[in-house]
Image (tube, rainbow, N blue to C red; front, side, top):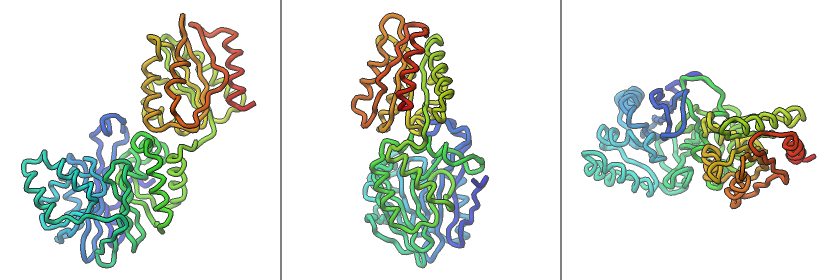
Length: 400
């Protein structure tokens, strides 16, 4: 991945987005130690189209980027693909600066713009300007800029209901809204997949069916590059990115291996989880990873659960239920339609082990979740007979 993105993408297309190294939690919950990018683009033709804005905190920098690329010209259109504030925060400033520009978006987007503008002092005036200058896009409809033509593709619930994507027909550019995005600013170098997976699973993961519909539309297009609203422009080996999105959105395991997640109070459940992991490694179980749910960012843990085809959940019984870190973890999986996995369970309880029963109950409505026949039940600390049960569960996990 390139360390920086150049402003000039082609003779007609320029990048005008910004990097954010101020935000510690994206959307108030996802740690972004490598920052975040808010991407925006401008297409320079007989008519000029600005593709989305940025977060309100960075609108000054964004507007400077835009004005530099305009070089004295004025934009004709603002294309609003997504109304989340990290992409729509610059709309009020844009409307004040360029009151003659037309706004193209889905009908649902215009409803949301009104809602967000209520918080502006001149919100009523801005709403009037939009009403006068609005272009309600049609699904599959086009907008000519001269030598460039924009084709609008509605993408409801990827991951908000108003979302649309835009295909530029001349240079074959796919402006994909939040799809194909990732965590991380563009001035930091890191592999794409891990942070793209964490971003997708955390934010879009629930809407696999809707993403599949978008992928079907994309398959009908000749795409030279993908322009997401977060992360780098994807220009090479597009099949790699499309294949990962196909797997993520169909809830197909990306890797063959076993992810062990534990939630331990005093350490005995932890010892059992680590013992199991070592035994799995000895038996060439493929890739084996272990996560302490009390000390792992849960967005990372959830991402890893979606990555592997088999899981082991090791949990202490707590107040007749399960330890809160495990409960939070499972609820996050369920919120994202977790499915198509095999799970082994280790439960611990000094007098009334209940963790396995509770966990199975939480997954009872999930699609294609199967549990090993063997559940390892520990009473306080692991004993020799518990190791024998682990051996049985290992054989079931390895299908031997």
